[in-house]
Length: 80
Image (cartoon, rainbow, N blue to C red; front, side):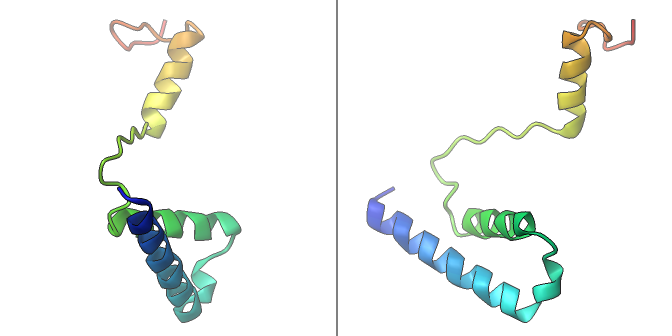
C-alpha cells in the first residue's frame, strides 16, 4: 500500500469516527471505545488488506494459560 493511499484511508476513517461520535456521543463511555470504533472503521475501509492479523479468542488465551501452568492436559484438553 502506498503512503498516499494509507493517509487517504486514515483521513477518511478519522472523519467517519468524528461523524459517528457527533451522531451518538453517549455510545462511547471511554477513550478505548473510540479506539475500537476507529480500528473497526479502518478495517472496513480496507486498511487490513495485505496484513496478516491473528486474533486469539478469550477461550484460547485461558486455555494456553492453563496449559502453561500445568493445570490442563495439552493433548486432551482435560483438567489434571
